[in-house]
Length: 82
Image 1 (tube, rainbow, N blue to C red):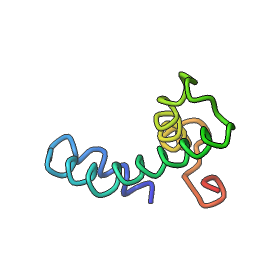
Image 2: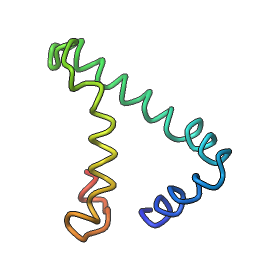
Image 3: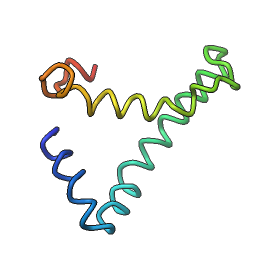
Image 4: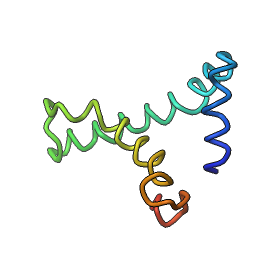
């Protein structure tokens, strides 16, 4: 839910323990999964292992989610995510 994520993004500035919990329970597992997905693409030869853009993919994905409302004035929905 976009409203929940906006609220959390503000709350973590006041509550560092909330940020730590989010990192441990949500962000790190998702990043591990993304790293595994990208490694499989490298293993299949779809991405070069020395591609400098690999380290920016998580930032681009998160940025795309965060910017949807700003760029298109539309909330995140299932169609956008798929």
